[in-house]
Length: 215
Image (cartoon, rainbow, N blue to C red; front, side, top):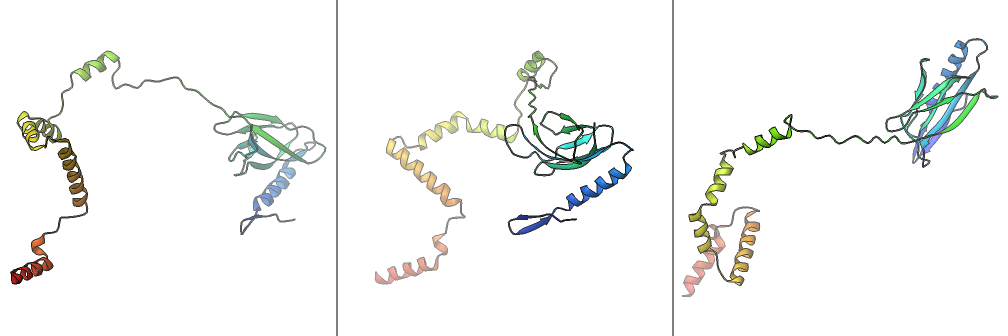
């Protein structure tokens, strides 16, 4: 029996599944009834509009406990009897059936195109209340929670605080721009840590004492 090697990049994978399928075929052939012809049924399941393989497709004979699943390339192989009805089933695709014909050879290879199954669901509106009227009444009856954020918002909108903020803000356009840039600069500067204190800088003190001696 010949081994099949598949080279993928630098790795060599041995398709031991092929040997397993052949061994299953031998067992199935031994258990088949007299006069029934056993055929090794193989093929590739592909997209209807392309040549891309459909992985994980269930290929089986209903009620006979015989079947397999397509691999990641859409390939499958298992033994069947002449006259068996084979079903191809996969999530997102329409089911397909095929009756095994009386074949001259004991091998049958097919290409099975699968058609996408698109289901359009009706629009569903989910509401926490049984009727729209009760929902509207519940919304109108809501009261904002008196949490810290809400109280802080109320304090920031106090007329006295707003008037004080207005007096502190510069009125000239250029001054407003300067103030905005300064605020942005301070925000970015403080984002990376606390500001340095010049009183704790020994080099600043050394410059200070040098300036006193010069005087």
